Structures are given as C-alpha cells and as structure tokens.
Amino acid sequence: MSKSSAAANDQESVKRSVVHATFTIERTFKFPPARVFAAWAQPELKARWFKAPPDKSTETRRKQDFRVGGSEQLSAAWTGSYTSHFDAYYLDIVPNERIIYAYHMHLDDKHISASLATVQFKAEGSGTRLILTEQGAFLDGYDDSGSREKGTAGLMDKLAAELEKS
Image (cartoon, rainbow, N blue to C red; front, side):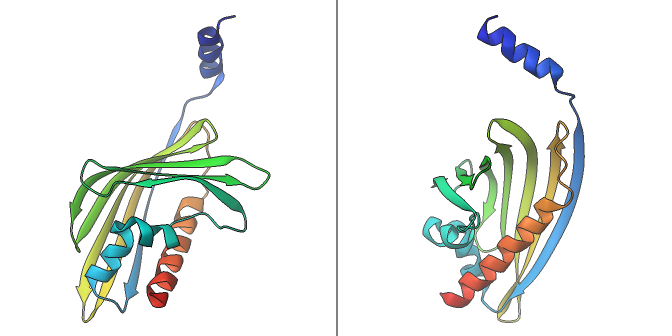
C-alpha cells in the first residue's frame, strides 16, 4: 500500500467531531497596561512565563514574530509522553490595549484543537485589568475536560509572578 493510501485509510478510521468551549479569565495587575502588554509582546519577556512546566518538559522550539500577520511557535517534549505544538497567528494588535490571535495545537502529529483568543488590557487606576477570552474547537474525540482553561489560568499565574520579579 502506498504512503498516501495508508494516510487516507488512517483518516477514514478517525471519527470526526468538534466540541466547542469558551472561557474568560480576568486578572488585575498592579502594573500599567504598557508593562503588562510588553510581557506578551517582547519575546524575551514572554519566554519567561509562557512555557510548559520545566520540571515536566523540555522546550524544543520557540519563535515569536509579534506583528499583525506574524506568528508564534512553541513546542515542548513532555517527559515520557508526547510533544505538544502551539502554532499561533496574530490577527490584530493595538499596543497596550488588545491582542487577537488564532492558534492550533497538536500532540505529536494529532491536531487536537483550533482556537481564537482575545487579550484585552484595560487601565484600572494605576494598574491593569487583563481580560482573556478564548473560543476553542476541540477536534476528533479530544476531550479537553477544562484543561485548556486550567492551563491558561496557570499561565496567568506565571505572568503575575514574572511581573512581580521584573
């Protein structure tokens, strides 16, 4: 059997499905919007907090081209398990106010999700209220069970810790 025939047979055996989920996470930081926005926009700053747990994984790829039309990639090999791949595309950026990006995730070669994320930075006194809304489509039997929201909340904890350090 040819390689393309084998791939076609594998795809036919997969039961196709899509499950949608939307969540919003709000956090307040005591730092101004420009500082919080910079933690997303500057690759060296984002690399400090937007990452898989180093005690459970090894980063294998990281690239960020922060501009409308730019992209971001992050891959991590999880100890004794799979490699996760995050591939994002920046759709809209308003400095210190808003970032909108679309992204998809793979576990090894399996495409598990496609999402649209909106991050808003709102001045609140001398600080910032960050509002992150994500609309996800989980694919072909991948059962998220809320892990994306929990993982994103964990990233917001890492962002808070990084802002406190710097």
